[in-house]
Image (tube, rainbow, N blue to C red; front, side, top):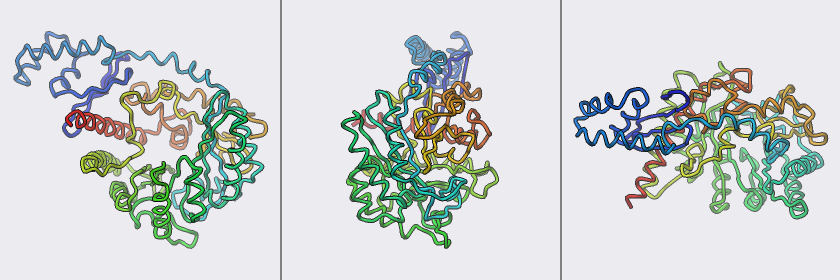
Length: 465
């Protein structure tokens, strides 16, 4: 990260690529080594000092060095290099425009699970409380609450979550049917997602999911020995052999519709690229591997010693994605999905995921929480689906939780990509939703560098065809 005032850039060299990111304009420049080094000192040294220094260093014609300098100056004048930060005054105002509008709910239809995963943040589905399943009546009220508080939004998102939501599959089907029945009169369209560990998948589930679910998230940690280390049933038996054939059948029947294989990597497998390779060998191409979320000192927690291993995995993953794309065998990695031509709107870049304001989790009893990772933390209870938000202080805290609310983010080049990071991770790491989960920041920045390098390489290869 290099900064002068609020004109921030980030330069990095990865494989054959010299890349310069202009934080505040969002511009990405792929340059040669001379321009890369010149940009690095452009704001710190005068022109008549930079030009001879670069000419000596690279043995280039001074006239060409001067031309490169002038091109950098032109980029600055165009607002795509060393751009000032004009977004901070907008942070609070943008959020006010959507105040009171809810666009998505995470329905905890089952606070119970048929697995006993060692790293489960949800306490094996109980969320620090009692086992329970959501009734149709509570779920119906949640959907009515969403419609009533969705303002002018047409598309509404509903995630069926747990625990294991398929342990309450009949209610899931009833709720989808109810939602479809009110779409026309309410002027809304529901898009559903199902997250499952796979044990209860059968032909009925496959048919229903492929008909009604816009996305399906399938929990698989990759290698059999890694998956079965944590994702066990209550008898201590691994689940890999039971779920993989079911996942393969579901994905094949889905015929290209959205799905994700979602894995978790821990201290046991910081070399998670091997798990991704296993998923590819099984025929899965829509992949996500997430770092574990758990307390420091937990045996599963990633350590400082794991960090260089994990960072290298991200780089090697980027290389694998490019290699397979050239071979005609592409695959998707969730954290590398990036649109450099447009990208997220500035509202999203500043305001983040919308937890506690635009997005809420609903317990089996109808209580509202900012997101699934806060469920069971009583001080974060927002209200319920009958009375709405009755704890406005918590909602105001989350509404103010934008990228500029975190002092540590101000000098980070990636702040307008991560939008300040995950409030739940921050809370569990620091005790404050405005804190910073520093380990997660390291991983995020590396993911962004790799994602941008991939896009640069793809664009270059496409232009050469």
